[in-house]
Length: 218
Image (cartoon, rainbow, N blue to C red; front, side, top):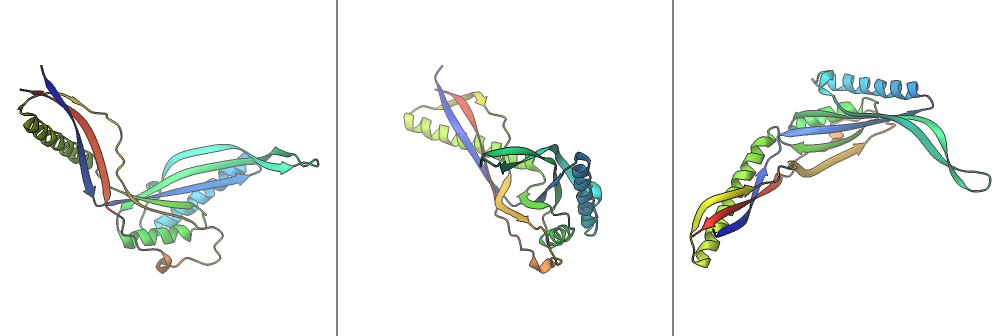
C-alpha cells in the first residue's frame, strides 16, 4: 500500500479572559519557627488585603511551600571565602485568579501593594477554558494536513485515499499571553494609590499544535 505522510499545524489567536497573579513570599530568620510564623503573618496580611476588594481568603491558593536552611558567604581572616549557617528561609508561592478586568485588577494590585506583606508579584494572562483552545488547534491541524495532502496528491498525479493513521504527542500546550507584568514593592513609606497602577491591554494568546496524518494514495 502506498501512503502519504503529512504534518498538520493548527494555530489560534485568543483574547485572554483570565488573570493569574503570582505572589512569592520569602521570610528569613535565625530560628525555623520564626521564619515560618513570619511568612504566615505576611500571608494573613495578603488575605486581609484581598478581602477588601471582594475576595475570600480561600481564593489565595498555595502552589508550593519550601523551608530550608540559609547560608551566607563571608571572608575569613586569611581572605578565603567560606559559607556559614545564617538561619532558615521559608518560601511560599501563591496565586490569585480573577476574570480579566482592568479596574478590578488595579484595585487588587493596589490592595496587595498596601498590605505590607512585601510580596513579589507577577501576572499572567490566560483563558478560563483552555480545553476549547486545544480542541480548536487540533481541528485546525487536521484541516491543514488534509489541505496539504490534497495539494501534494494533485501535484503528483495521484488521489487521496482512506486515512490510515494519526500520530499525536499529548503534551501540554502553553496558552498564555506574551504580555507579562512583574513588580516588587518593598519598604513603602506611603500607600500606593490606585492611579499609580498600570493599565493592561494584554496581547492576544497565539497558540499552535501539530499532528501527523497518514493517508493511502491511489
